[in-house]
Picture 1 (cartoon, each protein chain N blue to C red):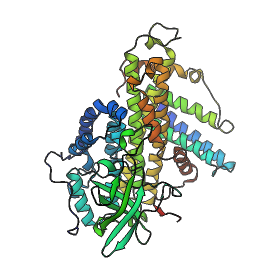
Picture 2: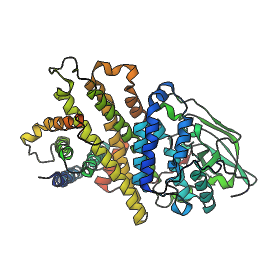
Picture 3: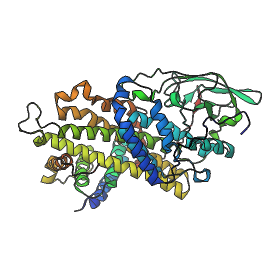
Amino acid sequence: MSGAVRALRPSDTSVRRIASDAEAIAAAHELAALLADGAIARDRDQLVPRAEMEALSRSGLLAITVPASHGGADVRFVTVAEVFRILSAADPAIGQIPQNHFVCVNVLREAGTPEQQAFFFAEVLRGARFGNAQAERGTASTMHIATALRSVGEDFLLNGSKYYCTGALTADWIPVAALDPENRSVFVYVPRSAEGVEVLADWDPIGQRVTFSGTVHLRDVRVPSDLVVEQWRSLGRPGLNHAFLTLLHAAIDVGIARDAFEDLLRELRGRPRPRHGARVSLANEDAFVLAELGRFGARLGALEAGLAAAAATLDIAWEEGLDSRNTGEAVVAASGVKALAEEVSVSIASELFALLGASSTERGRALDRHWRNARTHTVHDANHWRFRLVGDWRVNGALPPPLGRRPQGG
Amino acid sequence: MSSAIDTVELDVLLTQAVRGLRARGREDDAGSLLKIGRFEARLRAVEALPEGAERQALVTELRLDLVAGFPATLPRTFSHADEDLHLAFEAIGRRHLAGEVAA
């Protein structure tokens, strides 16, 4: 890396260095216990989770996919999915914020130069957080972008406006999806504090309110070429990025479903009085409640097992050596569990009110947050088309095409 | 019959459904592909569950839904246990409420 690029994260001994899959799971449980306490208040008041993101950095979890050759734990995909599920069951907004961090670490792994990998993996091991600035409003599709680099001497100027920039507000670096002067797909790793970068707190959805996935403006941001990761080079060969990002989305929704189900159980155990109209003397004798509870419990158990099974397809592909078949099948598996997670999470989060009765709708109980969070996050991309992708594979043996950003109008 | 055998049978049923829609020229129909994709995803999730009452109940539920999804293609052989599926879920719900199922 040239002298123009400086580390943003000082060496910090309080950042844990996780060395194994088991340590990662344990660290996720520790952090989840911390996050669960304030989740309702953060959602209610839409608080920027600065302290929580610092706790995430210190936990060492952000570096668990850094390759072992660079000093990371290089944990399995099964472990990453479980970490996301655990964190999201505690606070799904905090669980979602690092999703793009992990995707961007993987972009470096698949497309970074050795120098970029050495520099950024060291940053991540010191606790650096990647936000993201990928999607744009008003283009032909979410894969079409207008944000572009323009050559200025040996550097570039970056211009564009992004939305759905989860994590950007509290990031150290913002990886920006852009087009290089030849209209090829690149990721530009921009310091959050760089001149010309403006991150707005204009995120106002019904759920996942604490992700602050709002606007990032980039106005003549000067970028040395060292910070441009030529993702287009990796798009022509088999990779796991699509499967990985899909798997993490699924894990977040599985976590939401678990949190909703545990709240349902807790509320039911705490209320002996049956629902108005029930012909039983105790709530736990209501056959309809028990049957629905059992149905949800079984479906949730299958969903969690399915998440682990889908994650295992990524691990197997990695161990076998990536090819178009095993990476495509990993996308199929991750897509299936992601789409299923929408159905399970939304149904539990919605029906819990019917099973608990009128008092469950009191705002102070905040049980609506599960439905709002599930509804908001599961529409990240259309799960009807995820199911169709799975069906196309089962019926026609068709594998999904690789993801790649295209120029507006291209 | 163990539910492990049942998931194999479900896979056979799903294959029959796939063959049926291919025979009718529906292999590119979006709605048919969505339906197959949903069943495939459910089957893989059930398959990942360990043996037990949850898996058995979901196998039954999925078989009933599969047959309902392809009523003209798949064979229909039902039992009274199929009609009593809600009782299986009720028992599972009772165990969850009693804290007998680990999260």
